[in-house]
Picture 1 (cartoon, rainbow over the protein chains, first blue to last red):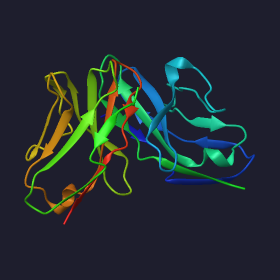
Picture 2 (cartoon, rainbow over the protein chains, first blue to last red):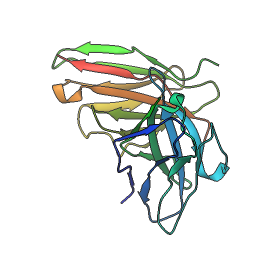
Picture 3 (cartoon, rainbow over the protein chains, first blue to last red):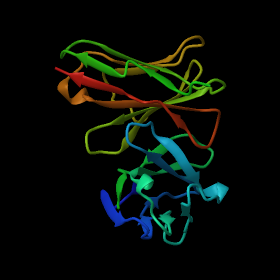
Picture 4 (cartoon, rainbow over the protein chains, first blue to last red):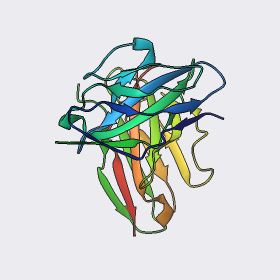
Length: 109
Length: 112
């Protein structure tokens, strides 16, 4: 079954500390993985996708097929990174997207 | 480009009434998706539509829920005979094809 697991509902770090938001997935084929972010009072927006291999706002995520993970990382957290983060999976060639339950990141001053 | 527009932002209905949620996709996007978010839970896929066609409705409850995306006008998510358990935030997203989706602000449905 297709499933996206974000084991942490809440992650609290100090400003300047490294941050890693965990995401594990279950899928039998070759999925496309995404991270979405929702800042306070704003709509959900795409942060990055694994096929782009890009860094957005200092965040990176590497797809590890062996561990079926797509963890989101940033070396130095900023207060403005505080938001809700969702990991999502879409089956290749399809359009159905499965979202994780989300992790709320709180960056303390 | 105004982005994905959903209305109303908030909708209150009494049990047994009908709820209609509208979604206008981004200009140039022909793919529309509906999601439901219950309190303290993540987004749950409901349905994926292209113009005049339902492509995947595997996340839709079997009864009372329906969706359409007509040739002209917005996509509509319709909930008939609403019950308290239908209270949730309903999000619409659109895309030009495969890849990342653009989300609306959502409609918060409250059932009295």
